[in-house]
Structure formats: C-alpha cells, structure tokens
Image (tube, rainbow, N blue to C red; front, side, top):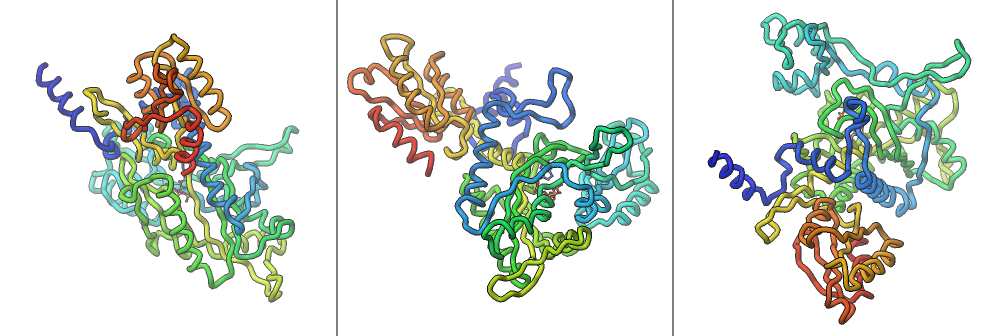
Length: 480
Ligand code: ATP
C-alpha cells in the first residue's frame, strides 16, 4: 500500500493550480459540502437533474444577477427592464415557432430503456459534428449505423434502438378550474418572447427610442432529453436575456458591439481570457430566423460549452407576432415619421451556467505557504457570498466582544460572518472554500492599539489596520 500513499501525496502536491481541467466531481462535492448547491428533493431519493441552491449558492446567484442587471439595465440609458409571466398565451409559442420547431431528436434503447438525444449521441459515440445535421441526416446516419452494426447502447451494449423521432422540449400544463374548459399552456422555454409581446407596451408607455433594449431575468423550462453535467443543462433554469431593437441596416454594427460588450463583461467578473472563446455559427447551423449567431464559450471541466448565445434575429419575432395577433407592432420614428419593424440583437445568457463557470474558473487546490493544502474559491470580491470573516483569536479576554462590535458595524453594509470556533488556520480555510476575500482577526494587540489583521484570500498576505479603517478598506476592495 505504500506506493498508493506516495502516489496520493505526489498527486496532492502537484495540484497547486486551477483545477479546471480536472473532474467536475470535486466542484460538485464542494457545492454540497459548503451549502452552494444541493441535489433536488434529496430526502425523497432525488429528482433527476434538479438542484436547490443553498445559503451560499443563493448569494452567489443573486450577486451574478445584480451585476448583470447593473451592467445591462441600471447603468445604461438605452436599456429598460421587464418581468413578464412564465405562463403566456399559447398563441405566443405558435407565433414564435416553438410549438412546431422547438424539437430535439431522440431514440431509446429497447433493452434498457435508456433515452438519448440522437445528435449528442452521434457526437459522443462517433465524433460527428452534429451542429450541421438536419433531421433527415440524423435518420440516414441511424440507418447506416444500424446496417454496419455500430449503433451500440453505451449503457447495456444492446443494438436494439427505436427509430429517431422529434421531441418537443416545452413543458405543457393546463389552466382553468372547471373540468373541460382547461386550456393547454406551456411553461416558457425562454424569456425572450415575453419581451417581444410587450414591445409596444414599452414603446407607448416609456420614453424609449430605437435603438434601445428590453432586458429580463427569469426562469425558463425545457424538457431536455439528457439533462446533465451538473447545473450546465437542467430542465428548470434561469436566463438573463436582452432584446436590443435597432433600425434595419444597423444590425451588424450593434451585433459586433454587443459581442464585445458581453465578452468584456465576463472578463470584469474575473473569468480568465484563456477560459473564454467566441465560436461563430456556420451558415448551416444558424436557426432559420437568424442572420448571424456567435456563442461565447467557456472551458468547463468537461470541455468547451456554450455560456452565452448572441443572435442577430432580424425582425422575425416581431413580424410573427404582428401576423398572429393582427396588432400593429411597427415603430414610428418620432423625428422622421418613418414606420418600420425593428431588427433585434439578442444576447441570451444562462445564470446557472455562469454560476458553474465562475466556480470552475476560481476553483483551486493549493499549498497555502504551509504544509497543509487548502481548497480556495478565487471569486471576484463583488461576487463572493461572504465579504469578510471576523475571528476573535481566543474565546476570552474580551476579544469576542470586540469581534462582535466589528461584525455589527459591517453587517449593515454587506454579508460578513463571525466565527469563534477552531484554530485560526481552520477558520481561514473554511472561508477560503466559500471564496471569502478577506478575514479579520481580533487579537491581544487589538486591545492595546485598536488594530486588527486583515488577511487577503488569494495571496494569504496579512496587513494590520485600525478598526475604524476596516469599512472603507473593504468598500474600496469589494466595489472595485
Ligand atoms: P444548448 O445548445 O446548450 O442547448 P441553446 O443554444 O439551446 O443551448 P439558448 O436557447 O441560446 O440555448 O439559451 C440561451 C442560454 O440559456 C444558453 O446560452 C445557456 O446559457 C442557457 N441555457 C439554455 N438551455 C439551458 C439548460 N437546459 N440548462 C441551463 N441553461 C440553459
């Protein structure tokens, strides 16, 4: 067994680096251990691919949404906010094309009943780039692979599959109390359509002029065939979307502007440039209404994946709603009196994918200058769930009372925690795992000269400052 322990300890020493290329399992374990994300409905054995966000996770989610809202709405004079319903008139989804086209191809293994999304199955099993495949191509490949016997279930090894078929991803439900009078409605699969159907309301009631955007944050639901990779793909998720309405002919310029803006915003959250890339969609891959689309991709622990889709959607959505609702949704330019249907640029970002990106980007296991290893989440201070930990060195001699006073002063400005138990080293490591950027220690010197030590999470360096400077110090660092 000696070799095993040597192997494990070498492995440990090697790992003072960002773990982004290593297994997702460690991040999942940290999320559970430290109250970021729990498996959904756990006490009943769980419900596949559902998750609940714990006390620290909910703070991180909220910080991400607040940062987005500030950057996309509050600090801009050309974007306004909206909060539309999750349940919309069923015609909305007929008009948008979701009822007829929002499908993924699936097939089942007849033996073990495993269900697969066929395009993803081809990608994983045959290394086929599925982004350009039509449904016909999918069926042709199926026939080919059936013939040569290479279509094999990765779960049970059977070669017996059902034929590929299209599966609509929208969740259906029924509205109405009286039996027989129920109408079928859908849980929204995107927040965008709630914006399009309110375009005229916003133009008529707010002082907006094209070019302008309407932004919204909210839950969306897709009955994904294979929801997996932790919170990357789930059936219930949250989106931050903006529809930016511009004059036809100016869409290219705005598209480039928003791609740049979004990319820089991700960097401002501390996402490293080497973990980000822009992927241009090919002509074949473009959705039928889209003139141009790029994905901002992040290097997740399982490989590159879409984080943010930015699409030039032409006037497709507004025109569809004009056709189906028979309402006039044209924009009238107040100066030139010109009438037109605006073109739209849509940056659509998943909150939960951003959450996973931020955790993966900041997850390190390293030697903290001591023999012990620490796990640390190097989150940007503005995203950290807790901004500072406050520790009295010992539980006596008046030190806890001083710590409590500091805690009471800071808590009305931002989330801070007081921790009196365990060695100071252990208390540091506990906060490192939560991504807390600063730890304040009250020691015997505090009693003499009203100063404390502040330890910075990433460098582990400590400085001494006077108690009355703590608030301004933290404000300056956190709001940076
Ligand atoms: P994918 O190709 O990964 O299924 P998509 O292209 O269908 O994504 P969009 O319709 O462009 O995604 O949605 C915008 C954003 O919403 C995505 O970039 C992603 O961040 C997020 N998103 C979409 N589907 C899911 C999901 N099932 N779970 C979590 N986030 C999602």
